[in-house]
Amino acid sequence: MIQKINEATAFIRSQFNAEPVVGIVLGSGLGSFINEMEVEKEIPYDHIPHFPVSTVEGHSGKLIFGKLGGKNVVAMAGRFHYYEGYDTAAVVFPIRVMKFLGIQTLLVSNAAGGTNKTFKVGDLMIIKDHISFFTHNPLIGKNVDEFGPRFPDMSEPYKKDLIEKAKAIAAAKNIDIKEGVYCGVTGPTFETRAEYKLLCQIGGDAVGMSTVQEVIAAVHMGLPVFAMSVITDIGIREEENTITHAEVLQAAKDAEPKLTYLFKEMIAQL
Ligand code: HPA
Picture (tube, helix red, strand yellow):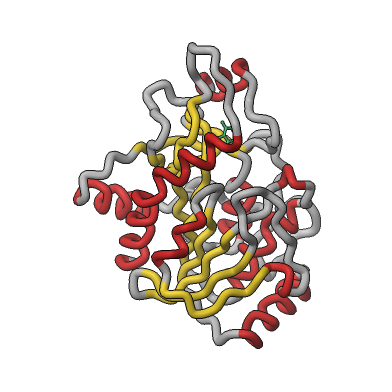
């Protein structure tokens, strides 16, 4: 594993003198975030040795290097989901590569279904904690000590100081922002009514098919994480409506300017 990470990292460095300090993972429908970046280099995933390749609509599949908020950043346009059939090592591969490229903070975004009754479509939710459901832990197997310890502490997967920073940035700009617990599921089915209800009852505020494994791998390597969900649909609801991928993408797109602003300001203040 280490060898693969080193080969991928070496290849990237051979293409571009990459010295990113922040890594950014963009969720479904949130890719035009890139327009805010001063792009210096794009490297398609399929050029990088050992890198998985993205298959989902709305994900373009490349690493983008450049400046944002005055800092060198690397953004993943397109991420790897467990439901696509990748194993957990593939899902977290880019996170490990970004860490080996030198990032010191990881910012993660995702589209998620609301399981908090007070949430509306388009809300932004700071992830303060997560509950991992059904997803395989990416650290199962022999521990790679170069990454981190066998039994990593998970008492603060999302750094409190980064959360406070985000809240202050949002308040200063009058951006309404929620805070809550993200439940990670495998998908690719959206949840049944009974499942949304269960997730609400056990303290979940949002549910999605990404993020948890990436965050575990980041925490394993001692990387401070900040993550935010865009609420793209309301799972916990009375009326008889369905949820479609198209609706999720549209809602994410609509909320994107707010998310972009927050990430950009956060990076500037790191
Ligand atoms: N459930 C799971 N994943 C999601 C949802 C949802 O309702 N919306 C966007 N991603």
